[in-house]
Length: 113
Image (cartoon, rainbow, N blue to C red; front, side, top):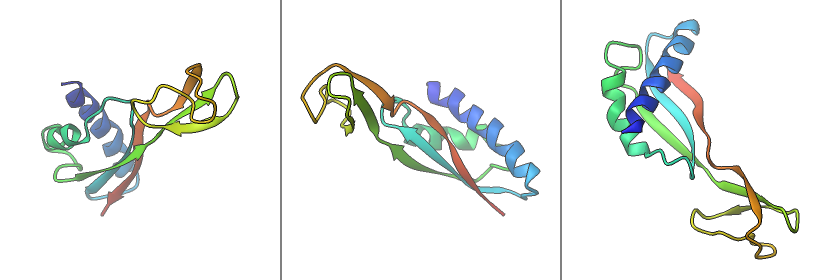
């Protein structure tokens, strides 16, 4: 259910940007969502019509690009992308790493008319 609050925040962020650009309406909201963010894109799309009702974003679609998980290994120092349920460095097999990418989410761009 946290996707509803996230979707409302997306609309609250997108609408003023579109208004400032002189847009008549938002056609699409392009998001980048990290693979570890636990945000379900289909839920965002579902809640968008509720959250956007009566705004420039009413009727807009959501387009999502996934942000891969990236780590830096504390043992070998290498940066690598890993899959969601992999718990070791691909270079040295160490599990002593720090996640540096993949938890974030943000509006990448808006398509407007």
